[in-house]
Length: 464
Image (cartoon, rainbow, N blue to C red; front, side):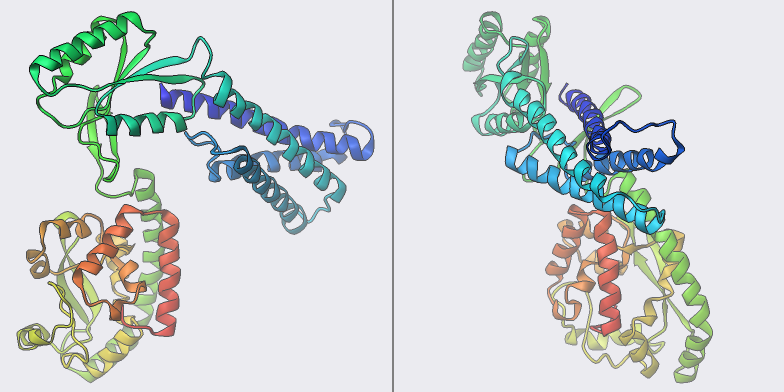
């Protein structure tokens, strides 16, 4: 019910917002010219275009400002401020489109008047809706009365969430705390029956903890037999951990706890970015291969491309490609240098590594040795942004909680690389940054990391 109400209310708000913005342009025309526009006149085409632009931009901007979310506005002042920002963006965009793109002069008086009118209309409309939701809808005869059954702490969280929830009317009428022993539990069940008989209750919301002694089925069965709608918050839900989702497959409900914050649409956007970046990077790889290959061959014996088995998403292994920057016996000499490892943990790294060739030092300093990995990205084995791909030996040394860093595709760059890679010597800090990236992922974060990576590489602040 909650999400259905949110969807319905936001659809009404979108239509009402669009109407207010469109009317504001018409009224501005009336105030400036003293008559309504004649739409049959071909000269009014600019007016119709401007209405379409501000309506579309306004709905997009209000959505970005979370005015079409599932939360009620925190205050009328913040609501007015958000509307003002939206309206300013609307008309700045409108002027840019007309003057820069369409190269049509837009009447300044129309723009200023419609901006002021649209702000006033939107504020009045939104204030009216908010006033109804905050006051009238919660006191009406039709408001849905909700009884929360659960421990006080969890019940308090639910009540706070319901107060913030956008809806056209619901009230929390009480909290029944379940008992954990059979004798008192029977009394609590009898009390639930009594409450459902004597009080005006439309729904019972169960917010119980994971205690096997509580007979949740008995409570739900009572509600079902009495025709009362029930909702159940899964016992495994914890406000401090990752959110859970309820999904359905062929009529079978699933409770899903996602390990990362990358949604299905996010995966699509991320893959599109990887394909574009992978194509550009692979083209660069092809162009510089002859020059890098000659330099590598002249400097030391061995192949131009170094291939190493790495661990990708959830244990998948693949061959990582790099321009060879070390002597061919580098792996054999690693045991001799293990005591010089500057990293605390399974990751291996030393300063002034004697296994690195002269050309290899240049390749690493300029990060050119990483360029062949764009082919790994194009193949789908890696991503432009992600966590550093570890070797199988490193993974064998992981604690169970450190496996989370390989729950997504590894990347050419990531938070670790732009957060002072050379200064971080604690592997746990690396894992912390990787988990931070996965837990808080946003598509724009990938764009920011890529841009920061380019800056770091240009300034040569360490190898990647």
